Structure formats: C-alpha cells, structure tokens
Length: 366
Ligand SMILES: Nc1ncnc2c1ncn2[C@@H]1O[C@H](COP(=O)(O)OP(=O)(O)OP(=O)(O)O)[C@@H](O)[C@H]1O
Ligand SMILES: O=P(O)(O)OC[C@H]1O[C@](O)(CO)[C@@H](O)[C@@H]1O
Ligand SMILES: [Mg+2]
Image (tube, helix red, strand yellow):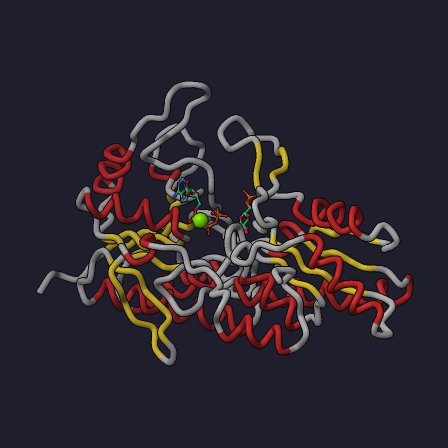
C-alpha cells in the first residue's frame, strides 16, 4: 500500500472552460480535509518552468471558497505549445519535460492533478511515462472526449448558444430574415447539435455530416415556403460541404500560437446559400469565446466539483495514470490513455441526429 500523498499540485490546461474553478475548489477542500497540502500551478504547467513569468502558489480553503461559480480559471491556462515542445521565439521547439519533473520533485509534489482536454491529457500521459504520478480531470466545452460520458463546460456552452438563438429568433422574426449562427466545437458538432435542437434551428451543419449548399438552400426555401418568414441556421465552426474544406481565420499569434484558427464557416455558408438563392436576406453571427466565458450552470458546477473530489480520492487510493471519468450515476477512474485514444464525434446514424431529423431539422446532407 503506497503512503498517502502529502502534497498535491493542480494545473489547468487547454482552452478555459466554465467549471474549472469548481474543480480547483473541490480539490483544495477535499485535500485539506485529508491533511494534504495543495499547490496551484499557474498557466497550464508553465508555473513549473523557469522564466515563463508563471509560478506555483499554495492554495487554501479560504482562498478558493468564493470561486465555485466563477468562470475561467484562477490559475490561468494555456493552449499554446507544450512542455515537451517548448517554443522560444523562432528557435526550434525544445523538450523541457525533465526540467519540469525536476522542479516538481524539488517542490515535494507527490501527485499532479492535471485538468484539461485531449491535448492536456497527452501531456499528462508523457509526464506519467517519465515517472510522475498524474491524475487527469477531463474538461472541454467541445464534449469531444471519449473517456467520459460528459464534460463540464459543455452544458454551459450549449445554454449560451441556446440563449443566443432565442435572441436571434426575435430579430429574425421581426425582419423576415435567415440568421446564421456560427458556434465552437472544433471537429465535433456537439455544441451545434444540442443547441440547435434546444434553440429550434431549422438547419444544423456539423463536421460529421458534410452538406451540400444546394440542399441547404432547398430546405430553407421549403421552411420559408411553408408559411414561415424567417429561419435559423446553426453552423459548427468545423463543418465543410461535400468535398470542401473547413474555414480558418487569421489571428494574432502572440509569437507562439498558430497564426490561424477555425473560423469563418458561418460567413462561408451564407455566401454558399446566397449563390443558390440570392433572394434570401441573410445575417451571420459568430458567437466565439462568449461560449466559453462566464458563469457555469448548476449542473456543470456539480459535475466539476464531483470530479475534483474524486481526483483526490484516487490520489488517496494510490492510483496513478488515471483519468476521473463521469459514468452516471458515479464518477469512476479509467486509464489515462483513453482520454487521447480517439475523439468522440457525433454519430451521423445515431438517435440524436435521428431525433433532430424527426423535428424537421435539415443537415443539408440529402
Ligand atoms: N499545461 C500545458 N502547458 C502548455 N500547453 C498546454 C498545456 N495543456 C495544454 N496545452 C496545449 O493546449 C492544447 C489544447 O489543450 P486541450 O486539448 O487540453 O484543450 P481543449 O479543451 O481541447 O481546448 P483547446 O484544444 O481549444 O485548447 C494542447 O494540445 C497543448 O498544446
Ligand atoms: O481559445 P482559442 O485558441 O481561440 O481556441 C478556440 C478553440 O477552443 C475551443 O473553444 C475549445 O477546444 C474550440 O471550441 C475552439 O475551436
Ligand atoms: Mg483539445
């Protein structure tokens, strides 16, 4: 039986996500109750690397008490590069993994709790391979992690998009327009599909179902011909038409990140529709990071809190290289490898898509 850990560290990596602070709070509360100290690593794992401007600080129950419902992460995060492919300006990427491990050892960290999506858990796995005890906590608004039934942040994002659709509907109704809403999700259509159903969309375009602009235009005209004067289209940022490409937009890289990210699918779809039915009046909204910011829903706070507590329980049981995973009604642990094995995509032949079709929603695919 391994001796119980005396010191845990917690880090949040990848894009921020509503519920991260609830995980941090839960880990600190449960660990302190068990007499375990918790260090918070700032900006992903950068706090364990010299010269990054980020550091490591002790987290106390008093400090985390008010953060349960706060969006973002009080530790900061990064979704740019990795400790194993560190970028300094234009120099080739270098491996700083061993430096990170040495620093963690010097600080007396027995277990690292790494909260993040597939990219962060790939980092967890490599740290584990190099000898660190790591427990992963899954997070993503995209819902694209296969190793857990659900991730916190997703429900909050779906609620934000649904609220946006409710607002777009009133202006669409007033102007007799077709409103196109571009939403996040990278290469998975979960946010678009869930919010499209909940928000009463007429057309939903997702990466898993390549569409034809002619079919989208036809289905919109059918909707509008059936006595309706407006329509709502939800476009996942990673969707593409049959034989087409996803759209990217340029972003300022800050010297280390990519110079372009997914974006522009909504505008592209508007142009494709207009090419077929120029008589439609279209407007495009890209919701962007509004979907990721702000207060988590009650359910996401609950899920995040349970994952945080169970991560500490797993550490107390002496587990290593595991991911805490929601398997309703329980939170269990699964091998860390499962988090990175494959992306969870929408099943085009699954019941959710069938139910959407049952509501008359078009995917523009046939
Ligand atoms: N601790 C970290 N330090 C540096 N970079 C990190 C860290 N964690 C994650 N990253 C980078 O961020 C990328 C994305 O992380 P991850 O997959 O966990 O996030 P996500 O929830 O899928 O969100 P997104 O991919 O939009 O950032 C990783 O591929 C990796 O390059
Ligand atoms: O914050 P960034 O780097 O713009 O990344 C945006 C991406 O991150 C996510 O919000 C989460 O993975 C995606 O839905 C989106 O494509
Ligand atoms: Mg990712």
